[in-house]
Length: 191
Image (cartoon, rainbow, N blue to C red; front, side, top):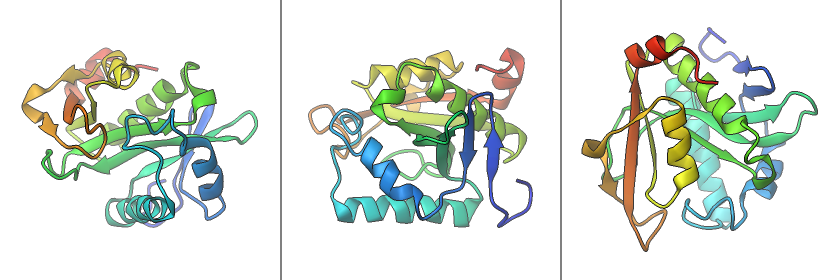
């Protein structure tokens, strides 16, 4: 995990966060490019949108050494979605801050996988990638997502909120939560 360019893999109790392989993309889109999963993410994406997402995630890895990694269930190798780290880059939003994010297929919801993967990603942000603070962004209507942010020990950061119609055109407010290294270390692992 420590060498630049080396394949990334990090195991948790039930999950593996790892770099993408070519064969992952079809399973990822089959499980996550659904109306339910994409509800707060701008809706189901076409082939052009899928290619753009892949290009962005691969560029994050190449440019920063981290990305939204594959989340794989260790028990059976099932690809559940993604979770990981990027540098915030949404137009109109905070730029360059370490950002944690996740997207899991619907049948993986409600089982603690997102929390486990996000907690591992936060630990990696602070312990391996040198972050002093990590943010998370979502639309106001996505209560499960911002609820997880709170359960991870993140606090609302209204000063970082911004508007973007890319995800929820009816309510374009993007809300931010954040956690500092000091808070993370003081609270201990959240998963």
